[in-house]
Image (tube, rainbow, N blue to C red; front, side, top):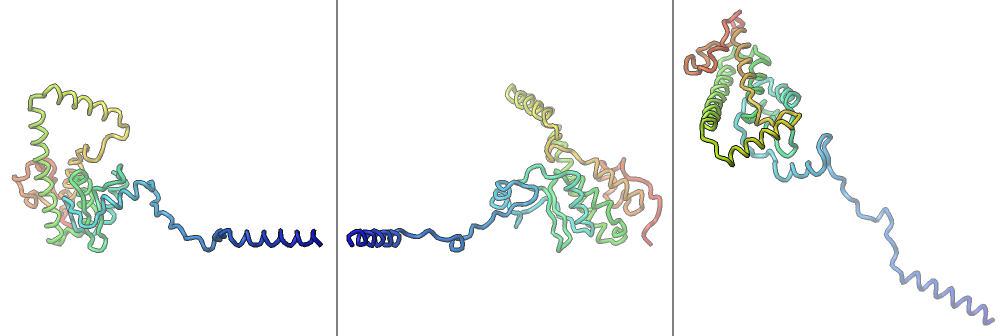
Amino acid sequence: MLFGAALVAIAACVVIFFKMVPGQPSQVDAPAVAAPIVTADVAPKDTIRQRLTTREDGRTFEFAVAASPSARCFYRLNSVRPWRHPGWTNRALDEAKGILKFEYEVAGLALNCLLTEDTSRFCKADERAKMVEAVSFYLKKYRRDLARKKSASNAPETAQGQMYKDLAGRMNAMDVAGGDDDQVDDARQLFAGIESVTAAGYFNSADFGGSSAPELANHIRPALSKPCR
């Protein structure tokens, strides 16, 4: 009898002990953890930094050109001159309004595309006016950039300035990718586009201001046809 009573007492103690210990939540009750949203070609950390520090909402670009081939030109820019830094961009696309926005660093390439894609639209005066305005704005910045570079090259070089210049040269030589977008002078892309549309008969020297745009003088071609009736 004593032995049986002891077994009953031990069993009662075990039951009391498990009731006092808090139970572990089941997997069903555990709070769900939201999975991070990661783009296909950007690391998670870079994606988060891009959202927090460089949102495109409200950003002002130097160029904003409305043209029907904007989407194609946006994709061409990304394929020919891809973004090398996921934390910033120098081109954007407003598909709803058909506007391609971009910075001076890629303006030559962007304007080349906007000039040479869907050229039949240039039979409309307002479409030609959009491109003339964009090209004129580019040339102003191009002249300013050339003047700045010329002034910098003529300025006497200090010992410290020469040291930084040499260091930059060595770093560029080590960059197998060929440097960033802002180090590329793609004015030749614009000039090639001007040659194409003038030869096709959509534009002439007078459209771009004649002698007021001397940079274009060697790139204006005689019209080979009259596409607009």
